[in-house]
Length: 544
Image (tube, rainbow, N blue to C red):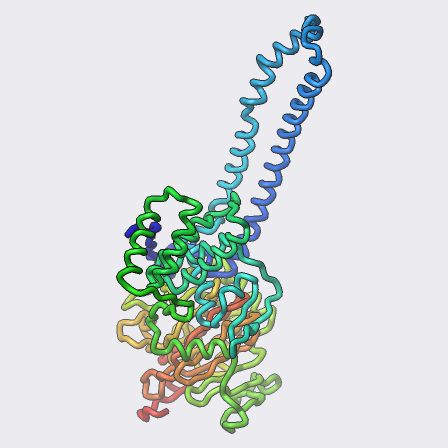
């Protein structure tokens, strides 16, 4: 059976500290997406210049048209009389010989178009690549899945899920846009090319609906048409087993393109299949989501992300408390930190107002030029992965720098030695479109992990600072402990990754939920085992 072409793309860019990252991957950092706004502003200015030049050119043509029309309406009413005047006869011959030729064969339109193309090419380095378009589309589908969002609502610029049969707003964004039929087609096409018909059906259904609403009219900025959307949607339904609907869509496509041999073959094939097996119709409820590497924890992960907050109840567990904390450190006596104990197992604490606005902005500013695609451990090496979408940078600093002062403050609160090499350099992370980090451990789970390259043991503790706020999403979900921590601007989350006997605490399995709306920045400080001998004593008891 023939079907629309499918292309497969391979992502193989590494972005460890010593490797130059591709100029693409804009979608993995909202900072880069924001920077693209200035690029489009330049393109708008260039387009405005092009339009002005084209209007001038058309005004010249209209003036010539008016001149010639007036001559034919007035002077040439009596052609014999008019041509008896040699001046009139001369101007007619001259006009037909050269003026019409100059107008018809003018290169001004081509020159204007070439100037527009040249100015576009000058900005090309700052434009998104194909992988950015695909990554952004995947980000939308990720948000759709994790937050159970309805595609028809997304198309209308709303973030809604169905609860008890009623659409409910998950969040009300400050600004939003409506999606076009072409927008939906491109998202559906990305899913289609991956063989992901669960998502392609839903997005292409909306694309077809919107294209039908415009009467199938094509716009020059569009990459797809009604015929394209019908073609891909028909085959998507066929692949999900909905042959009768695939046939109906293919027949509709033939009304627009009756001589399409491939579609004619598909129609014949579908008709034969329906004769040999009974037709069945599947709604979106019958579609199955693609399998996941994290299928075992996916339901819990998504449920915690949707809750967008802690499930631990302080009044039910007296061990969970809020207080002004000094950790017995003289430096905190006059200005104690507001501490909120979120969990006892694993031990997770939220320190409110840990960092000032100025410090947060300083850290983000220092990190901007060093941001590279975030990586994950892959054996003894590091590599990019679909389950971590963000960019990160590593910052070192002297004791008097903002970074150095944060290290000192972390040590005061935790009682641990956070100086390098006992603490890793500060990692600053900016998340992208639907940016996330699926369930993982911070500590090494393999002796070959890159974590051991510092030769200071495993990651004993994590200190994560929220450098920004978000409108929705982006919580930190602890999967096995069954609670999540929402993004609290300027606060910091602290937890221990290891038991006192050095074994990893499985209850620290956690995830960075996709950012639904907002620009999420965090800073991570990982503190290692070595150097903590007098700060966090060992114990052979596996329960501690």
